[in-house]
Length: 239
Length: 239
DNA sequence: CCAAAAGTGTTGGGTTTACACCCATGC
DNA sequence: GCATGGGTGTAAACCCAACACTTTTGG
Image 1: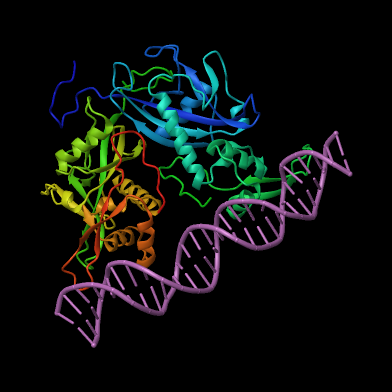
Image 2 (image 1 turned 90 degrees about the vertical axis):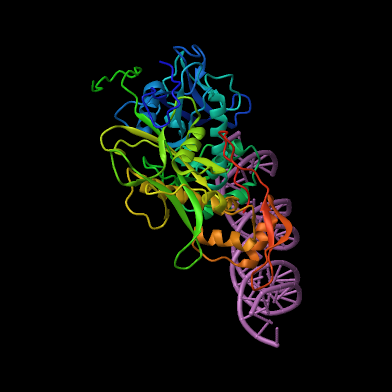
């Protein structure tokens, strides 16, 4: 049964198992500072290997669904989440990923808004964790999360992506807080505002946020494209 | 045998076949204008489906090699090429990719220098084609090439990637020609030179190219990082 | 000397950055 | 009124595209 055949063009060597996993990011206020920070949901392994350890939500690719559909379905089943922003991250296929058998994972990443995140079916085996304070996860999932964070920061520098972590309406200061949380540096409110206002896809509404103890900030709405089920990723827009 | 089980956590449903393919780009002088243009090698299908049609080099993932190794090995076997620049492009897993059976392809893309490209083992079943004048290819390989071109242009805008299409030593004018060919627009020689000279990783040698019928341009060398076998992609550098 | 491309200088316009300042609200 | 962020103005610094100009070779 073990494959020692050096014959190149043959394929009867039992294919590696193929799984789909997803890194999901959402904002939650930090317990300490109260400022928004990145969190992600993990599920506890209920079988070997890595039984009992936390891992990215995922599962095998069913026969009759696209990769993206598989990610969506699995997410819904394991966590109750249905992210509007979902994109392919990378295919991981190292030999040493899983103890024992060969495993190839196609990993997606998602951003969810607070209202979406609130629908999570949390349980003994499903919990949210701070992205920057993860314990040791199953498989190579720590590295995968690191890579996803790197991609998130990267995309944030150019792209218009922060809105997908916020709700339907948001203030410009909230967007700035997202940038500050993800990029981990402070930004000048005045200049940041100007930059955002100069980009397309971010429209002012005529509503204002009340209840603060200062001047009520205007609310804005994101009116740009969302990655669809297709292959192509959106072109990076100007900041 | 057909999988109708809606049971989520089971996996005995025969996994999709998993293949690795690669889009390889190299520069060749256009027959008409003589200016450099993008070419890529294709191989002719010698079995069903799409028997006789041209396709990206690729094959099944062998059991005991990483994804990147699989791409390298397959490339060497089918075309004789051993690209120094090789990176993951995307995982394609639509349901309608292959007539009949379910097929997931993890696609890599590569850049080869002229000396590397010259080692191609061309034959009746292996040939170079102009990237912008492709006939109808097997599977969804036309779309994949389009996507790879998009990524190449994209990466060119920021990154320092053009060198990988040139030889060990090159003039700044050659680099500019690569940009012009890939981005399909003219660039100011003076400003382009300044930009390049201000980036790291591109070092002047003390050699000059002779034999032109004008002032001999200085030769430069690329001394920056190359994507290794690891997971992480290089950070986009300043132009 | 001339043509042609290499290579350098300069200038105007746009963009970013730093920071001063006024505005509107809750308390 | 006063504290607090929302929102606007502005000048210096910086970056970049356009283009004039000098340099060095082959013929």
